[in-house]
Length: 639
Image (cartoon, rainbow, N blue to C red; front, side):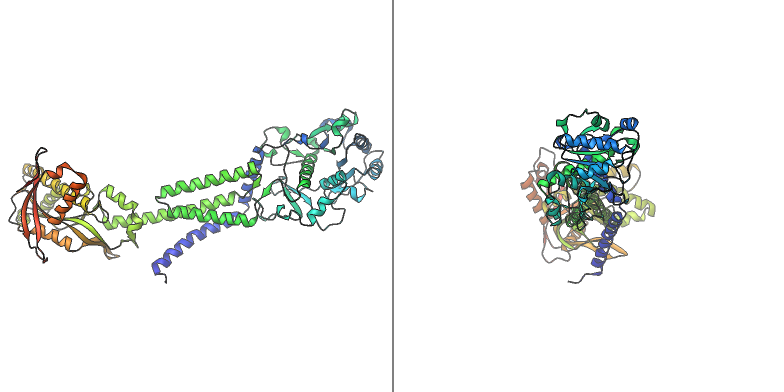
């Protein structure tokens, strides 16, 4: 079925709104703002997560502290390092990693490190690929390991480059080399290169990263509690203060820890530490964490301790967030409820994503998904708000001030089902119609100026209109010296309820005419008397006219009959407010008595006019005149 011009315009507006939201989301992603937020959230939740103690790991750190520098000077003499390495080997350390560059010797005994590394197969020398710094001269290939760290754009170490495949035997990381010396085999490295656990490595869009350089085998680095590894200073090692049993069977890492040496890095845990001593992490401690993670992975090479969502899952999640937020804000009424549900969705997602990392160690993309919820949900709310404003203007234009605030609120709540293209769609509705006219209007008008005449009529309408609108009726039109009121259109209380409301209105007007005429007499104005005709039945109701002039029209035989009742036998009028009611309306009133047992209906005073023919209708109408209401102790009266 082809789209109409209106439908095509609505679809284009819809697509434009959400298209702009999608472009904003894409722009934020490309600007790296969302990645920065993701990384900050990752660091904070990692900081909150309880970290294991490094004391449980078979790793010890021999740190070169500020005290060591004062004692031995800087750079540390090679002979001191050789003495320390020999002592560790005698104490039963399985592997020793020297996290100090010694491509050039220091001190008088510069050959001692070269000799030590050739005779001690557990000793590993570092080199740096990025800065082209070589290992200790003469170091065997199997005792070399590069110590390059991968640092994110914001200067924080979160990832570990575990291995780079396709390289010659020399290019092995320091932690991997130490693990292989400890275990005596390189099985883990071969498993990685064979593809075991390939889905556990980082890719360019893993977790909260966008366009990451994920070359090689990289994983998120799990950290032990900062400062918790078994630690001794170089002076303690050289002076024999370290018990042999404390280091036996461990891997020892020797490196600088003195802040003045600036071998310090930001890591997730340290970014939120208030203590100055924990503001940064020494490189040697980072290597200890890398080695500990590799030891854990040795048992399960196919798994990473910190898992990250894959790009396919992340994209599906963002798409789902966009769709569900748009659906909630477009479909849930009222708008306030849609907004509350959107806030609940956002809050639930943030809590779920945070708990996934905190408790399950699964890093999901949080920021872009949250922004998708906000953007697409906000677009839906803005569209609904703009449409609501247009619809409010349409309702006001179509009905004006002809309804009560309560009915207007009800119309507003049902606007989406009542309005179509800025109009009330044509519907057949059961209604009760009241027509009124003023007796002897022509005679009175001859004796009053136009301004005085209009004021005289408005004083009457001031009694009639509130009586109508307060009971859910609508003043459909003013007919010069009268009005037409409708109960049940565009919305109502049901046929019987609308008939009851119309009768109550008529009684209030009838009783109000006495006070009005008392007020008119006091100001010297002519008395006023009106006639009311009330009939119930089906009508065709809806907006009629064109874009320049629209009104809510109610047409049909029911309207004609009410008008004829009002004008029937005008001379037969002996009170201030004559009310003629058809049998159809009175039958509905009898139904209301049976349903509600309202006592006041039983006290109505009726005069039977019998069946009479009215102009424009073939079948006669049974007509009743409502003369008033008896006191509370009386029963209904038929005259």
